Amino acid sequence: MSNAKALDAKTPNSVVASIKSQMQLVFVMLALIVVYIFFMFAAPKFAQFSIFTDILLQAAYMGVMALGATFIIATSGIDLSVGTGMTLVAVGAGVFLSADWMGLPLAAGLILTIALGALMGVINGVNVSILGLPPFIATLAMMMVARGLALIISGTATISIANPGYIFLSTGNIIPGLSNAALFFIIATAIAAFLMNKTVLGRYALAIGSNEEATRLSGVDVRKWKIIIYMVAGIFMAFGAILYSARFGFVQPAEGVGFELNVIAAVVIGGTSLAGGRASIFGTLIGALLMETLKKGLTMMGVAAEWQLVVTGIVVLLAVFVDNIRRARAAAV
Image 1 (tube, helix red, strand yellow):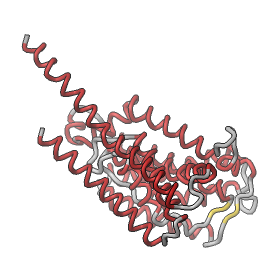
Image 2 (cartoon, rainbow, N blue to C red; image 1 turned 180 degrees about the vertical axis):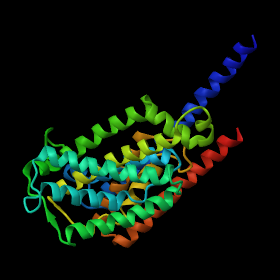
Image 3 (cartoon, rainbow, N blue to C red; image 1 turned 90 degrees about the vertical axis):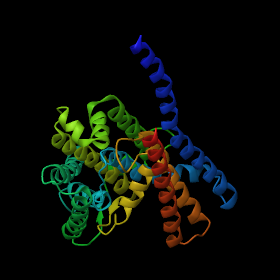
Image 4 (cartoon, rainbow, N blue to C red; image 1 turned 135 degrees about the horizontal axis):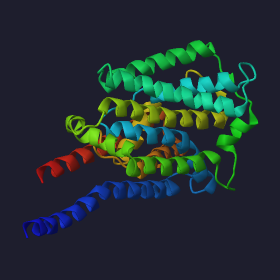
């Protein structure tokens, strides 16, 4: 009898908790709609379909990297190296595929590029889990190392990737009217959602973020899974680097600085908690679209780049503030 009563009492609470957990995602979706409608009236020509497709294309490479970062932030970690790491991986792609460098076949170049991203993720994971460095410090160091290596390898010069197949990966149109980069972003979101919600990778990421010590005591090899999580994020970063460099057909080794802020902002705005234990893959997709919509709209309105940073910072602060309120209310229950 007591078990039945406990179950009856628990079920409504579970339903309420489930509804509350989706509220931030609903708010972010509404915010995206409101912002888009605002710019339709405030920015000339913003309502054109070409602008919408351009936003999708812009959001693709940043959004794919944000999908990987979602797994790291779910563990209560952080990755500050994702921006310059993307540049280093893109430089690697240039070295592998450019006719002026190694000139490898497309398939071989892509495999090596993805492997380079995975290796960077593994190094971050080892620094965090094995060496015990705080994620902030470990990835900050990797951010500087990646930036330096990108400049050294390229000789500070732009690397051209005039491989038609490579460029097609981003700017081509398998589906008419939709760039391949945007299509891949959608597919990557589905893959990330499956990994987060249907595999032990996602469950362990959330468990580590909720209570790392309890997860370890339950028999989970936390060190190993942290390395795997950072490696997966590195693979997503590599795909983002491919979409970014393939879009332009060249790589500038000085790029990438500050990209990590947009990536983290997309994840946090989407509802993933910086404290760990809570993540939303679909929210990250919406967050990336919201960030790029703001950027595109403000640019078309003639707002200076420095003021765009101010707006972005305010949006991130609001997202973190809402998350803090949510966690405080959850702790009070």
